[in-house]
Amino acid sequence: MQVSSQKSTASTSKPPISHPPSVSGNSISLEQEGSESIRVCVRIRPLNQREISQGNANCIEVQNPQLLTLQMKTGVRQYAFHQIFDVSTNQAEVFAETGINSLLESALEGYSCTVFAYGQTGSGKTYSMAGVEDRLGGAEYTSDETDGIIPRSISYIWQRMSSRQERYYVKSGFFEIYNEQVRDLLNPGSGVLHCRWNSKQGFFVEELMIVDCTNIDDLIAVLHEGMKNRKSGSHELNADSSRSHSILMVYFISEITSEEGHSYKRYGKMYFVDLAGSERIKETKSSGGMLNETKNINKSLFTLGKVISSLGDKKGNALKPHIPYRDSKLTMVLMDSLGGSSRAIMIACVSPASSYIEETASTLNYATRAMNIQNKPILQVDNSEYLILNLRREAQLLRLENEYLKEQLARATNGQPPLMVDIANNYSNQNNPAQDPVLQEFTFEVNKLREENAKLRESKEKAEASYHQSMIDNQSMHIKLENLEYAFVGSTSLKDEAAPKISQEYTISTLLNENANLKKRLSALQEEQAQMLFKKGEGTPMITPQEDMAQLREYNEQMQKRVEQLQARERELLADLMKLQRGKSPKPKN
Ligand SMILES: Nc1ncnc2c1ncn2[C@@H]1O[C@H](COP(=O)(O)OP(=O)(O)OP(=O)(O)O)[C@@H](O)[C@H]1O
Image 1: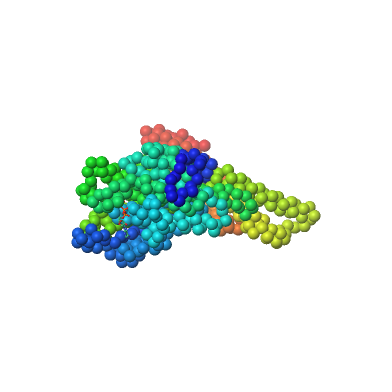
Image 2 (image 1 turned 120 degrees about the vertical axis):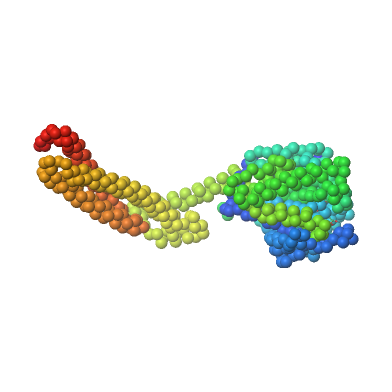
C-alpha cells in the first residue's frame, strides 16, 4: 500500500498494523502522581465578509488573556479560560501560547497527548489546527505563516528529536469519522473500519493503515494525504466545510538508555483532532444526504457534549456517573483523552458575530465544563525491558548491601565497632542516595521505630479498652451496692433488726472503702498511661499497665463474689421478712 504524495518518502513497505504501537501488549503504564485538568483555550476569529455585510456586531470582548465577556440579550456573561486569543492573534502566536509544545515534549517522553478543536461550523477549527483548508493537500503547498498547529508541531517535533539523546521511531495514521463510520484517510479504499476495544489498548481502529515516517516530509505527506481525502462539503455557512471529525495520530517510540547503560522503550503518542462543526440545520440550509450528515455530526457532538458535561460535573465525580463514551464513535476514540490517561488541550473556536451568539455561548459553556475534566497522564514504557532494568537496579542495591554487611561483619570479628562515618565515606561516590548505607541504616532504624510505635499504640488501645470496661464494671457494682444498702438499711419492718443491721453496715462500709480504693487505683493507672504516652516517643517499654489491669480484674472478681453473697443474704432476709409478715418466726442465722 502506498501513501501517494508529491513529497512522500513514507515507508509503507511493511503491512499496515492494526494496533497502535503505543499500546502494544508488552507495554506497561506507569501512573504518575496527581491529575491535571484539560487546558482550555478559546480562539475568536475575525468577522468574515458575509457577517460584516449582514450587519453583525461583535458580541465578544476580551478583557484580558484569561477573561472575556459575551454581550447576551439577557445581559453580560463572563467566561474565564486558560488562554484567550482575540481576533488579532496570528497562527504563530497561537502555536506559541496554547501550551502545545509542552504536550509535544510529553509525547516525546512517552505520554499520550491530544489537542482538539471544537466549535460551530466556520468558526476556524481547521484553520487553527491545520491552516487554510484548500491549500492543504494541494500540489502547490509550501509552508507559510498560515500554517496551523499540526504543521508547526511536525516541525517542532523533528527539531526536538534531533536535539535529544534518544533514538525515535515515528509512525502515523489518519482517519475520519463520517456519518458514524470510521474511514482511513490514508487508505480510502479500505471501506468502513471497525472500532474495537480491549483492556490493554482501550478503543482502537482495527486495520487502520499506520505508516513509518523517517523524516519530516513523510509526516507532512501524511497530513496532506489525509486532508485531501477528508470529506468536505459546501453549505451556507462555510464554502469548504469539513463534514467529518478527523483524527491524525502520531506515535513516538523512543529507545532510552539508563545511566547504567541499559535500554528500554517508551511509547508516546499525539492525537490532533479537528471536529466537524456544530451547526443549526436551518442555518446551513442542508437537505437530502447533507441533512442526514448534519444530523449525524450533531449526534456525535451531542454525545461529546454529554461526555464533557458528565466528566466536568464536579458533583457527579463523587457519584461516579455513567460516562456515555460508547454512544458514538467519536467519544469512543477520544475516551482516553477525556478523563483518561492523556494530557489534553481543547481549542474552542468561536465567531464574534452577534447572529451566532447562541452557538458561541454553547461552545463557551462546553469549554467551561471541559476545564473541570481531570486527566491522569500515564507514561507508557516497555514492560519486559523496564522490569529487567528495575531488577538490575535491585541487584545492584543488593550487591552494595552485601558488601556493606560483609564489611560490618569483618569489623565485628576484629573487635572493631561499626564506624558509620567510614562507611558513608566509602559509598559517598555512588551519587545515589538510595544506595547510601548510612541512609539504609536510617531507613532500617525508622522502620524499626515505626513497628515499635505501632505495637505501643496497640497495647495502649488495649489498656484503654480494659480500663474503660473496669470503669463500667465498677459503676454497675456501685449501683448494686446502693440497691443492697437500700434493701438492708432501708428495711424497718424486721423485729430483730439490730444484729443484722450492724453486720450489714459493716459490710457496706467495707465495700465502699474498697470501692474508693479501686477508684484511686484507677486514677493512678490513668496517670501512668499518660506518662507512658509521653514516653512512647522515646521508645521506653511499658509493662505496668498490664499488671495494673490484672490487679484490677482480681479486685473486680472479689467484689463480684461479695455482691453475690450479699444478694444471697438479701434473698434470705426477704424470705424471713415474708414469713414474719405471715406471723412465723424467722430461721436463726448461723
Ligand atoms: N483566525 C482566523 N483568521 C483568518 N481567517 C480565519 C480564521 N479562522 C478561520 N478563518 C477562515 O474562516 C473560514 C472558516 O474556517 P474553518 O474552515 O477553519 O472553519 P471550521 O470551524 O473548520 O468549519 P467547519 O466545521 O465547517 O469545517 C476559512 O476560510 C478560514 O480560512
